[in-house]
Length: 318
Image (cartoon, rainbow, N blue to C red; front, side, top):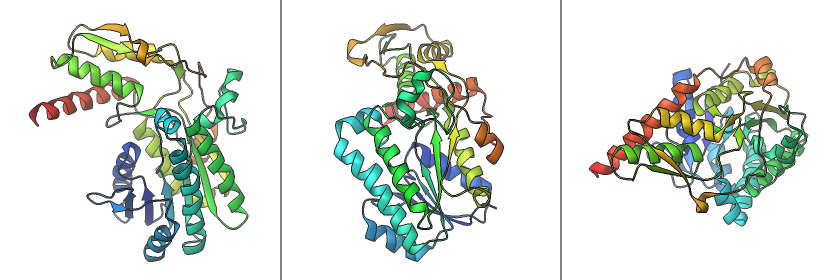
């Protein structure tokens, strides 16, 4: 049964907005306390690095589950501001979990980690299961892997923990800091006459296991629903099991455009990928959560492009 009182961190972010919608659709009985670093409409301010503030909120709300999304999530941003990434992604996670142990010890703690933590293990060239070693190659992944280990140690103290490792997720509402959203934004600007019909790109040969963010949120909801059947401390992949070349994804987006577009390599955007290919095995999620991706791939791309067009139109009228 889905917990009735859920505290969600990072609720104002890309995934947080979609998860709020998913949980609202799950049951009218759910009471969701949405939090974010700066607050906002229907979102209470919470700095996860402030353990006292987290404990006070938990004391008052007494959740059945905490879903921890808040993070410095963009890889370039985490690399540029490594100290901040470690403070939020590692220290903030540990402080929040400690507050949960002390103020709401019966609550499940769903920690949204990342499949990027497998790092060097992807070089084996096969779909990775949860048994693959964590071997991160950059700051963001390292902070998440370290947090996973710290949280796992708290299981022996009573923390009711699930570690979720989603692979690359995309969808409407994503920031242009991420490649597929950036492609769609450029297409929308070209269609609107705001950019020449050339789409600037970086390295396109990397292959990634992409998921629609709405499928990812369905996985989080399924995890909440079945938490009582799971072993505390378990790690669960969310993956499509299919690696798609980024260049092919770009071609599919351009095929949906309304005007001819030429691809141009921008040297400033070229960034060698340490991992040419990432691919996940979500057998465990299928068995324990009855979860698998359901949204058609072309539907995901169409929705991303429609969202980009709507943003461009909105910007034109402001």
